[in-house]
Length: 376
Image 1 (tube, rainbow, N blue to C red):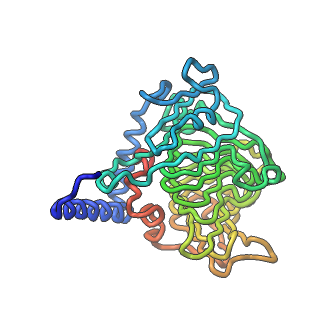
Image 2 (spheres, helix red, strand yellow):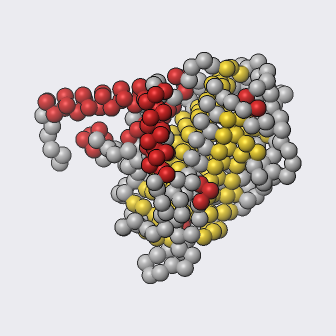
Image 3 (tube, one colour):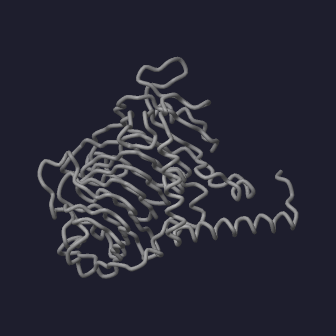
């Protein structure tokens, strides 16, 4: 039975919670504070070295497993106790050809005191890829790869190379690929769950690469590649920070499909939009920032670098028969680059403030309690 908390103790807890939420809410409203914190975060990242050995207590996956280790990631996941305890899986370098599904239950809160004083990035399950540089997705040494179309699998979700349906989950320094290619939806990642973080990870596909379906997710310093609707979902509130988003063919980057104006949204912040080196021809003016899966689609690109691959219209209708533009919010704020110029579609908006799309609005006032601050 938890200890009884006095009236004075409860007041202290409420005061701390209020102060913490006030800080989170104001953090992105003050550019100098953001810049100072960002520089400190980058300094921290630059000092990081390698992660080539597992942390103490981690479950280990290896291409040549020793006693007590696993040869597949799914086997390691299956070995986890279904009790919400904190667990870490460490993956040694290599290419793992498999489909991984994670549904293990996890705690949203432990108890009231632990929730209020919870350390940032306190995930109940972390998957760590071995890497020579934890700060860089380009240095990743672990690949999970699979080839399966949604048509063959039965649903988008079931085609995912990595399927995560749990709360409090983090993935670091792992590249995830669906190599099916053109012809059908084929997911690299299917994400559903509260407080999921993806850090310096890579996601590769062609159509529907990343499904951010429900809950709230954070993608920090990731690489996302595709051609058609390759960041999509319905009910999730998702923040993409300092990602590289690369188009491998003509098409649209985002396809948001919320059921109402208060449902899901995507914000892509301080990211680079470019042509993938895997593209076989020039994509100049062949790519759109997004199209509305439903009429309530809400997507914002803020402070991004847009290359010449972005069509001057910026945004596209869903289809001629169903344009879905009646109540969309397609916003841009202080983007730069050749792709930021041109006359935008009539249903798009250039905004003068990003206050409605800062990280606290998207992920909630407690975002700093679970997002890894090294990747902000």
